[in-house]
Image (cartoon, rainbow over all chains, first blue to last red; front, side, top):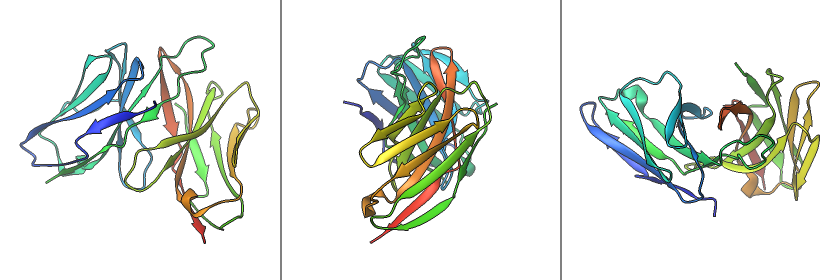
Length: 117
Length: 114
């Protein structure tokens, strides 16, 4: 099973709202990722968690707040977003990279389509 | 940082013909090259990947070739079918601690005409 699930599928929020995106995987992967994808563009990396610790933050504005409560769950808390933050938010997971390892492929979820009004 | 260029941006082929998408990368330290297919309204799906110790890999109608010296890799789809129509992204990656950072190409919209 190589499934990453994301909820909700669609989200519409105002600029003053607080909402959260949720991602879940049960493949035993210890690396999890958040990406942002605008229409007709490739995914852009936002955050990387490794062993439930934030290892990479690609200079993302503080209105996006990630959280990894356990090895299977990844959340993205949203607050005071701007209309330009409207995009498809993708979660991915992978096994951790080991020296000489061959099983670090990233698997993506279906995404949450976010619209900020 | 890594930079990945992908060509062409759009590609139309007749059903049954072959399709080739090419990518070049800049960082010689990159050692993992996945290809993703993204259908409308869905997340990217891994279709094939290749590591730097291999020159070619094939999986049924899909093959990927890697030329480390020239820093380019290509996706080959044979006997194309309408369901192959999608956006295809190449990516290059190197390890970053215990996780990987993928740098994506700009994408190729493949249309297979029946």
